[in-house]
Length: 360
Image 1: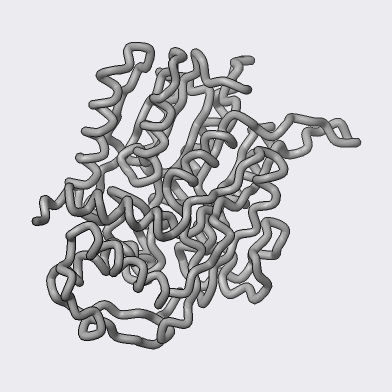
Image 2: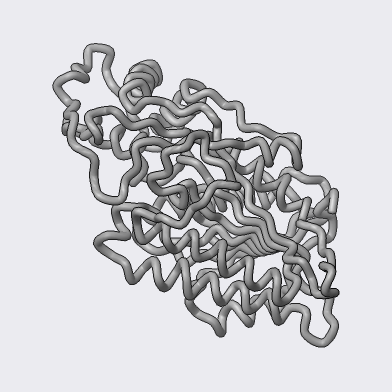
């Protein structure tokens, strides 16, 4: 599958950060493509950001007559809706990005993770399974979001897809590992080509306000104090959203091959890849770069006293000291490695933030 021409692509979480950027990237093609977006538009964070992203998608779609774009407001946990979407649109490719995100929120609101990340993903897998009923061609590739959180407290770095990931330290991580296990079982049983993508700390313009770079900016602007966990001794493999989207797009076009094993039964057409920058940054350095770019963009004044608004605090429950992606499998199979520097990415975020919130 080298091209998406004449394909129907279902993208869940289409109003989300990665989902919306993926939709907009897929709209750049000159080929006829049908894009179906699904999102429940929940209020986990400011819904106006999701509406803004949908507005950007609509603006691009209006200039692309070869693109068919349809948006459905609904929930993965609604099995009847998922079945209806598959029956009506018969997607060739399914990209499941809808999920309840966030490590901390999973401690206080576990129900959202069971509903969205387990039951919802099960509904997607069942719909993919039944897409082959009656000899139909069915789904050619299921791509779904996993997370670097599955690596838990692994000490070996960088994190490789060959590492054991049986020790999650948050419910969120456990649900993402469960997605990988469920997808493997369905790939084996029903020959569904599926690929899981472990994303590493995604950031960029119009991102999630609960992520550190965004929430720090909001707090600094209000004159509040930002808390830097583990006394600043954390490292994160920050990955710019455009790099994530490019990786997803390449993987979408390369489903795992269907093959039979020695017993004549299908070998699971199943793969897992890391998508990360492979360049972990210390949180104190990250905050320093963020501050510089916020001043440069005019979000904060040049004489802002950052030292008065920083507080070093202990590690929090569910968190890990380091994330670091080994992307050699992605490079080998798809010839791609994320490359956007943290400074370049945060500069684009700061410029967007100033414009979006009409500062100055």
